[in-house]
Image 1: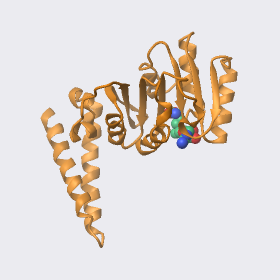
Image 2 (image 1 turned 90 degrees about the vertical axis):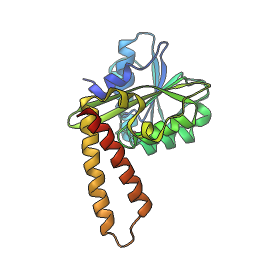
Image 3 (image 1 turned 30 degrees about the horizontal axis):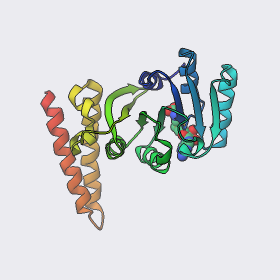
Image 4 (image 1 turned 90 degrees about the horizontal axis):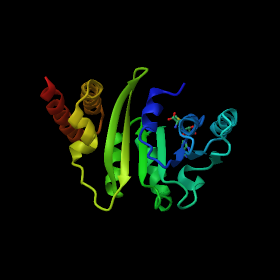
Length: 229
Ligand code: SAM
């Protein structure tokens, strides 16, 4: 059974679906999408041998070898130009997602939509989208097995709205919605920042700039979570 996280992510693929799933591991997402959509095609990219083998096996088991190609390589290196109209990258840190997109920028000319699910550092992903003419058009925050996940959808547009520092951190749509999962996440993020400041203050050289930034974020978080009370 596909995780709720990947099932939600799949909903943001737009017809006609010709997508690449980078860091596909078992290729569960491409298989699910192609089984649900008879006209969909996919490329599953994997840099590591084990997951690459697993992905091939899943595709064979589902008899989808005519519609899903499994390719081994780093990030977007597995793609040639104009092959896909959408890309999904899920289950990695935001920093790695940004590196993959940065290193593969020349492969994005045909990519109308990026559907990204960073495990941490979602603000880096929003910044990347904002800086590269992808408008954040949808966001989702979900909780599964005790973890919180954010899904961020970016559409390529000539003119994009500049996100504020606060919107980059919280997510423009998530900030508007203020769901229970969102509120719980930021209540816990506030505590994490308080502890981090305490630890930093005990260090021999105090990184003042970092502490100031964390304090600023705590103020923003308080504004957001108190607003709900
Ligand atoms: N996308 C799946 C998901 O969300 O369930 C799998 C996530 S798994 C935690 C991350 C996968 O990304 C691993 O299988 C890893 O081998 C792969 N990966 C990491 N860096 C990569 C890169 N630069 N290019 C392609 N795949 C990468």
